[in-house]
Image (spheres, helix red, strand yellow):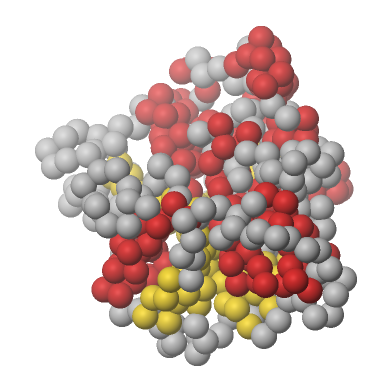
Length: 480
């Protein structure tokens, strides 16, 4: 193994948890790490070790959402790769060690199994090819073989999908790397899972206790990284963070929740999962789709759903920095959908013009984008003002309570909407029934803020607001 990747040679500042895990000789390393504990730093360090030690190997980066992997995890890991001496080649003629999302230069060594498509591949000069796999892409993990694997945010991934579609890939021939202790290594890193779907990661604690030579398991809180980020920063961050968010995000306390939730009736009974082959039991290709948007500069998001008799099925979440790209992602994902009619809901600001060059109303622009991709778009949100806080809160609470047979029920695909589920569980309410949106101040991880829950609210309010009359509550005014 090359000396270049020994951490001490580059004086990388490791905390004790990272140091212990890096030097583990176990084949499987599972780390449940809170925010600000250096998850991506350690992933960059460990994968850098794989890259250096196994020339021509095929590695997998696996996660639920490939865009998050490309736009957040990989760039953070690259900072470590650069410290280890690996430089990216950004244009022809540059000197470097790897390229991303393109066919590698002719002088790069080839891998044992060279990809046919480099759209989601990182290629290194020594023949290493890393395939990015987003399980939210159809058949993404089917076929192929790898010599090592990194699973990012594993606590958001369905265990059955991993065992059926992903884990079998880790089967690179032993003959290619005889006696190499890193061959067929599996690195699992995740935040604390907040639904039972992700609790399988805790099984590795039992496995590590029974077979410590094969499995390594550890957890980390923000205080374990105080050597790197400083105790003063930690205490300042704690003072600015709501207690339930602090417990879950920074202290790995799984059952953390706000004292007063905006969605008090929401629980795991509203969730469903795909099967081992990533098939959605509710999705119907011959029925129209519904879509609900929340608009924010730099974080545009939506939920795709299907409205059925007395039932709303939330199928999938999407988000990007650019609204047009969000619509493109939806159209690409549902390209094979047979009945291309889509009902559009969302924030009432969609009925206003946005600043910038495009002077169309936001909803008009969305309808145009869908129409150009072969869809029949139907705008359902036509109001100019947001609904009042109390009726909106009470309607959603009543529907999620499922205590009336004549009310619709909601089901959410937790495999395809993991950030929506997490955010809904962590959203507090103010005394006037208003949603507490303090989480939106976090610009680093907007997918965990209240943006997606807002899109959920619009998806429920506009189709079902007439049910307020059946709730026994008399409202003289229902805006929206």
